[in-house]
Image (cartoon, rainbow, N blue to C red; front, side, top):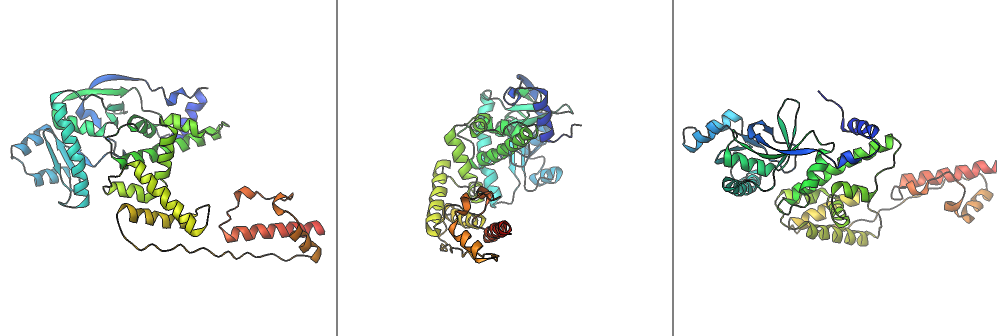
Length: 365
């Protein structure tokens, strides 16, 4: 069994070839595959916890020769969805938030399933082979479940089959689904974050081999999106409240929510008179975004401007103190990386001040 981490796999690939075409050139073919040999990807953000039931059990449920509760017990399907030929059963607690969310997915699967009964699905789902002879679903989870509903698990359907597991599977999922307008916004944001996680691992692998880090343009090219779309995604994933709102049923477009985020950020910076946001600021902004997207009229707390208590170390002489007051510290020949200082962190700034004075005191000795 291959137990290599993604970073190890990427380092091996990068070492084996001078080009990085393996990131985009994934050999595939179209084949007819039995549905019962395909395993859904439980880590896919568009996946919902569905259990595929046998054609026999589906037939028995429809003919009322077996009850829903018997199937729930048989498949351990509490808080899951059972899917079989011509039947889908929502096994979440009736009326709960999860029950409503599952129903939305079920509605889209039923619509696709009805179309699949009449004709082939236009865009074939994508899969890749596993070591045990089965296949892992990569993209097209709703289409796959629609095929189960339309034809049954013992039937076959047409799939786009990669000859091996893609090097960056989450990035591949994002690439193939980024342009789809019909996909839930929550899934798009989660897919972007998963893809960026893989790309960061790719960057780490490149650096270990002495290669340059990927540029923003190269990242966009790998993801297959425009500069504008890349910026939109990066703004939207800054705050957990955005994904949570979409998970809870927010229907606003990604562009509309991006505008909400930018407006709240801008207003917050103006209130506090700061240019950079620290972790505490972002927590406050996240709460404001959550309130806005959920139409809550929670009174907004005015951010409290922090107090900065700067302290000077002891000078060895009045001459050193005078030199300190008259010099341009940031342009002096001191061993300090000014770009790395967190100016919002009082302790960090005080440590720098102490270091400066210590260096001046040493020079006077």
